[in-house]
Image (cartoon, rainbow, N blue to C red; front, side, top):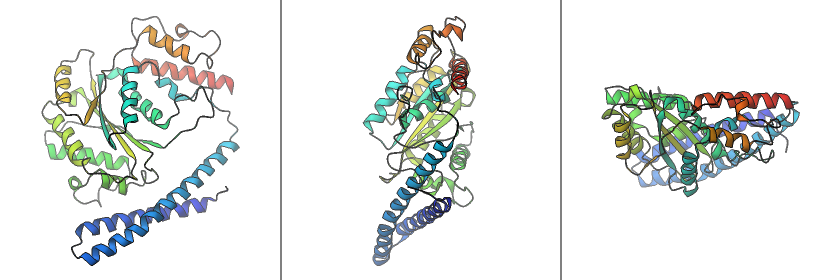
Length: 345
């Protein structure tokens, strides 16, 4: 299959226009009172939705072809070990629980708490989960392994404490809408909007389909934690903003709520645990992030033995310590990966 850029541009415009028309018709359907008017709108929606789905499939085929052509014309050799493997040192407990949640597919929208000392790299864990969803974490065993789906990983959203709860909610949504390219000046009263509205009006999310995912990390530093206000805003976000049912053709959403302590033995750790456990069954609590040990590093180097220089040991890159922080480990492993990929190029 060949492609022309003007074909892609034209299809993208068509998809965007049809999606906007569908959104307006759905809003009109909600407001319609007359039965004949409702029937007419529903008929038009039933005609438009299959056309949009077909256009999206055609666009995806063209984009796949374009990507293949560009990759084949590139002179850069394939990486011996991809960057995402810097994220795979330990975190077995968290990874096992996350895989269980994904495999059961109980909810289209999922919420997970991640908590621990801020040097344990909460964001790196979310990035790892995004690659897990794509299905590429075993590409070191099979260079031809390709992603099984698309995953849109959003930029981190910072939940800065505000005593005015309504203003706090609006700030959270302002960041979320900005990340996904939704104009907050034309959306009307923001607190009346929900996740379905965000999905329908985000150009960034429109290429995603039912088998795809969105990952979003909401960061809550210790100084912005308040045992009364923070759980209240999180509950509103889960029950109200994300409470509406998404259509079956929408992607799956994973929202990670990350509480980052300033010290290993933070004074607020106890009240954080109490609050998140009181949050109900809709929020999954991942095991606390802890330091890494010598065994974790040895296992990483054993796993990638065939990709590393012969007789490479972890002590070639790390000083012998009782424990290691993930932020240091990720940096050093990235340097190692850069070195071996540069050596093989």
